[in-house]
Amino acid sequence: MITIAIAKGRMQEGALSLLARAGIRLSDEAVNSRRLALMDETGQYRFIFAKPADVPVYVEHGIADCGVVGRDVLLESQADLLLPLDLGIARCRIVVAAADAQAMTKVQGMIRVATKYSQIASAHFGARGIPVEIIQLSGSVELAPALGLADMIVDLVETGVTLRENGLTVVEEIAESTGRLAVNRASYQLKSYEVGRLVKALEAVV
Ligand code: PRP
Image (cartoon, rainbow, N blue to C red; front, top):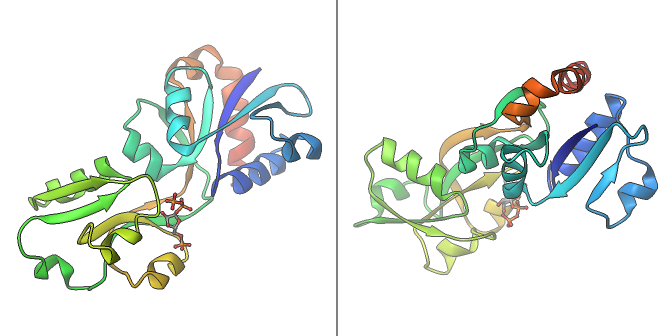
C-alpha cells in the first residue's frame, strides 16, 4: 500500500479526476465525507488530504510516499523531494502585481512586498539585487496594496479575476505553476514497484 497526500483546494478536484482516469478511484461516499484519510476502492492506495503547504512536509518525512501539490508550494517549501511528473493540472502563474504597472520604477525607497510566498519573493528580488521588505500574510494578499500595507504583492494568478477586481495588474511574471507528483526519496527506492506503477499510470493519462 502507498500513501498519497493530496493538496486540498484548487488542486483536489483535478488530482482526483486524473487519478480516476488512471484507474485509482475513491468511492463517492468517501469523497463526499469529511474524513481526511481514505482508502481507494482496491485498498492499494491510502489518500490523505492536507493543506497545500503541509503536503511537502508529509512527503519529506515519509508519512506519505507521494504527494500531489502545486509547483508554487514546492518552490516555497524547498523540501528535498523527487518530482518525477508534471501533472499539468491547476495551471497558474506566480506573479508580482501592483496597482500601477510601472510600480517597480515608481516606488520611493524600500519596496514593501506582501505575500504568502516569502521564499519565492525573496529569491526573485534578491536575484535582481532589489532590496525589499517582505510582509508575510496567509491569504487574501490582494488586500494589502489597497489598504497601504504593501506596494506590491507576490501571488498566484489563475484567471486574473481576483487581481482585476482588486485594482491590481501584473508587473512581472516569476514562474508558471502546475500540479506535480512529488515522491519521498526513500519510498522511491523501497517501494519502487508501487511508486513506478503509480507514475506509469499517471503518465498515461496526463
Ligand atoms: C489564490 C490567489 C489569488 C487567487 C487567484 O488564492 O492567492 O487570491 O487564487 O485566482 P484568480 O486569478 O483565478 O482570481 P487562493 O484561492 O489559493 O486563496 P488565498 O486567498 O488563501 O490565497
